[in-house]
Length: 315
Image (cartoon, rainbow, N blue to C red):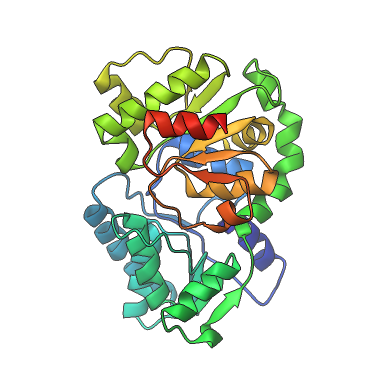
């Protein structure tokens, strides 16, 4: 979602040539391959095929693979986006080879050092020479950390560029009807963060709240494979919660656009729901996107307890 509008802009300017590298960190066809089709992104020039593994394993494998590519192609700039392991690994490999780095979505901070993504964000911003911020709080965070303002460029949110670019096509799909629900009369759920799905007590509390909400409002839950396994391990009754396989970007955008509420631990969905005016309950202890709370539709349910989720939903 973040690279698509950048590739369109680069492709429209004959001053630039680009090499698209897919690290393979997100490797499931339903969760990755469909995005290239929906977003009309060209087939990656290189796929490192890293796959799953611990944070250290993924980062190390990407470092090795990216370094070889950079030494072969000698680019003028390495552009990375977001806050995943691929982001930090590519930035670090480039910096070691003295190749300038640009960071798309720079400056976001949750101030929660327990989040692996926060570590990736901070370190990538230290490495990058060009810091491309999606919101003004990103500028403020970087300046407060002592960053030279000449390195900071407020460019807006490229993921929302993608959302609005493809929203007409997403609406044409009629995603709610495909799942037997009416616009404004259902909710959407996503959960994937270890702090939610790998902690049995936390996951059970969230599911208890979702089960109660689903008794009065249909809840569609496109489920990450890892989350599905954790729920299966708990052998818990899901009531009327409707589990779905991972779904393509356009279909998901259409579902979110028509939802009465979204319950999620995703960073991107906090932004998309704010842009669409859809109420969002973020099931996390902190957020790196506070602008979605102060200027948007997002409510942070920090303790993720059954009672707090239900109270936020009722409000």
